[in-house]
Amino acid sequence: MKKSLSTNTAFISIGFISAVIFSAFSANVIADSVLDRVKSSGVMTISYRESSIPFSYLGDNGRPVGFSWEICNKIADEVKKQVGRPDMVIASQAVTSQNRIPLLQNGTIDLECGSTTNSSERAKQVAFATNYFYTGTRFLTMANSGIKSFADLKGKKLAVTTGTTNYQVLRKLSAEQNISLELIGAKDHADGLLMVESGRVDAFAMDDILLYGLRASSKDPKRLMVVGDPIQVEPYAIMVNKDDPQFKALVDSVIANLMKSGEFDKLYKKWFESNIPPKGINLNAPMSKELKANMKALSDKPAI
Image (cartoon, rainbow, N blue to C red; front, top):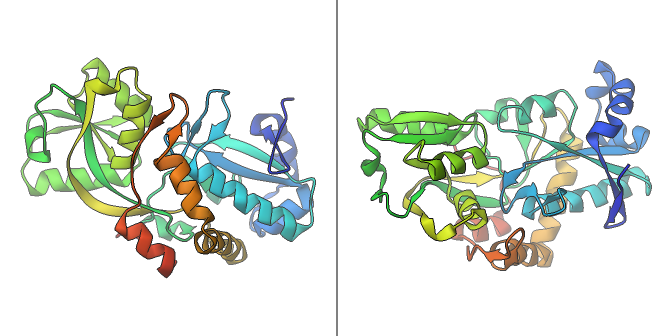
């Protein structure tokens, strides 16, 4: 078993402890608060995305890193204090756009730390913590493609990650504007980048900050560019179980304290305005006016 320490908390693979978790968590236990489960088991399960740079992704050592991941570890530190388990272990679980909500609902994961848009539709199934980022849909394409806007995609192939709000927005927009493009589902963001680089599609549509991250981590960033005016500015937020208001209150309080203390600003500069792994490239993405405003408002209001 591989173990490493981060903020005095041990991390182990979800695969190693899955038998323990599922034998301990019956259907009735899943309905309990995360705090009750963690106090009893000594294990908290946090999910991550494998390619949502710089929010949640795998670093050079194959371990989760990123802006969201660090925030979730701050939350885990508070959980450890609240339940009185200094020996609490964090189990990490990779998720995708398709399975993140089901795994949260059935208790496989306790906290979803990725790049998830806070939407009214999703709020019917899960609860969202305080919004901690704002972004808009744009397009990643080859620098020599000639594509500059959404209108330029008429008659072309556009990849969008399956299970995202971006897919729904673009399908609706293409119908409204009579843009006869072909929408192709990508299994994840890395797959969307590969489709563009290999010429299988003309562009990949996703939240602009994720596109900058994909571009920065590509083999040759100069060959790619992010284009188009932002479509529908949306907030990102951490997902928690809808039936656990006690845990949501804890998560919100941690995020509020980070924002009020100035620690959130430091984390933001670390991941959006400094050199980051794996290639040490700076995204140079200053904080948006929407995020600055929400650091005071502390709203969990959805995009739509």
